[in-house]
Image (tube, rainbow, N blue to C red; front, side):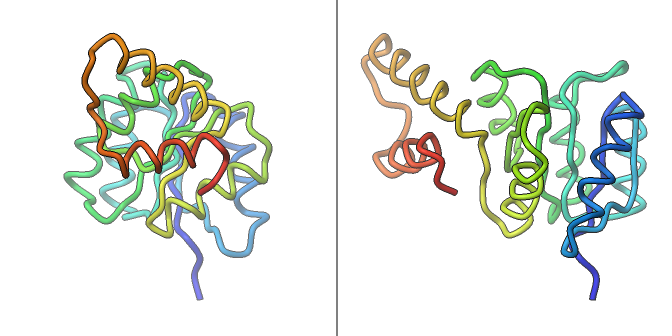
Length: 167
């Protein structure tokens, strides 16, 4: 039985190696490839057909967020988990708007990265709990300014639960 197939995309080789070790240590996850640029990520995703792409935001040739639509167009069943140092809620919103299923910070514990991969592979969504709280605060402030609620009641409830650390 094979596990969740993961493509690791980051422009730093040492980060890719570390992530591969972390994911390889879990019985249910199988790192199947690596890429260091957006262009290579598209090529590797096309040939490997991973279940999850662990995708960095900042890369030398193109933003990871910019290639999400291309990755999903070519691999509609693949889930995108953004892995980033960017802890600004605007990046989280942009990632989800582009089609990502999750957003985890590079400073996260090994177990959190594994949990995030498992969650998105299973069809769920994942947001770093601290970021989720900041996103809720930012959304609340925007809502007050805009005087209209862009989220349905259910979307707001789900976002609040994510911010509280629920999956």
